[in-house]
Image (cartoon, rainbow, N blue to C red):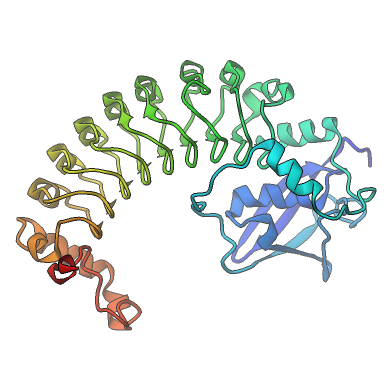
Length: 374
C-alpha cells in the first residue's frame, strides 16, 4: 500500500457507525481529529479500540494494522465533550514558547508530524481542515489551494494577525471556526466572506472584536453566529437580513442595546444575550415565532416586554437572573401564564422525578424580590 493511498475506516460510536477516510500514512491522532468534528468529543476524551487493543495516538494507521474496512470502537469519556471555552486571556506566541522552554524537554524523535503532502491529501479527502492550537499567525497558503473541496476550516486557538482575503477561494465552506484567535477589528476582511455562499456556521467567540459590521447581513446561508466573549458594543442592523439564522450567541460582551431588526430573524430558535449591559429589549423580538430559548442573565433590565411572552409562542426557556426584573414582576406580565405552562411541560419529567430543584425548588427564570434587599 502506497503512502498516498486513502483508506476508509468504520468507527462504532454508541449506536452510530461513522465512516472516516484518511491517507494510509496518517496517524491515530489524525483520526481522532476527524472524529472530533463528527462526535464533538475532544481527542483527549477518545479511546479507540482496534482488535481488542487501545490505539496509541503517535502510531500510524499502517503500524496499527488499520486498513480499509477496519472496524474501530470509540469510547468517549464523560465530561470531555466540546463546549463553550472559559473566558481566558490569550497568550502570545512568545509566551507560549517561553512556557514550553521552561519545561523539561522530552525526546522528540518518536513524534513526527505528517508530511505536507499527506496532510493536504487528508484535507482534500475529508473536506475538514483542522489547524487549531498551532501558534499560527497566518494561514498556510496550501489551505487556500483546496478550493471547493474544503467544507470545514478550524483555526481556533491560534494568534492570527491577518486573515487573508483568499478565504473566498473556499467556495463550499460550511463551517469557519476562528474562536480564541486574538482577533481585533480589521483582521477579518468581511468582504471576502461574502463569496462563501454555503457558510452556515461562523464562530468568532473569545476574541477582541468590538462590532459586527454591515456585511453580516449578506451571509444568507448562516445558521449559527457565535460571537460571545468579545468586546462588542454594536451589532449592525443588517443582521436582520439573516432569515435562516437559528442560533445567536452574543453573551459576555459590552452591548447596551441590540438592533430591533433582530425581530426579522424569523428562524431564530436560541438567542443568548447574557452578561451584557442591556437596559431594555426591542419589542420586535416578539416576532420570533420559532424562538424556544432566551438567555438574558446578568444585564441591567428593569422590565420584560409582554410582547415577547405573548408573541414567542414556542418560548419555553427564559433566564433573567441577575437583572432587576424579579419573578414576582414577571408573573404579572401578560403572556406569563401561557409561557409558564410551556415551561413546566418541557420539564415535567424532571419535576416528576425530582431531577430539578432538589435544593432550591424549580428555577422560575428570575430572582425573587427578597434577593434584591442584599
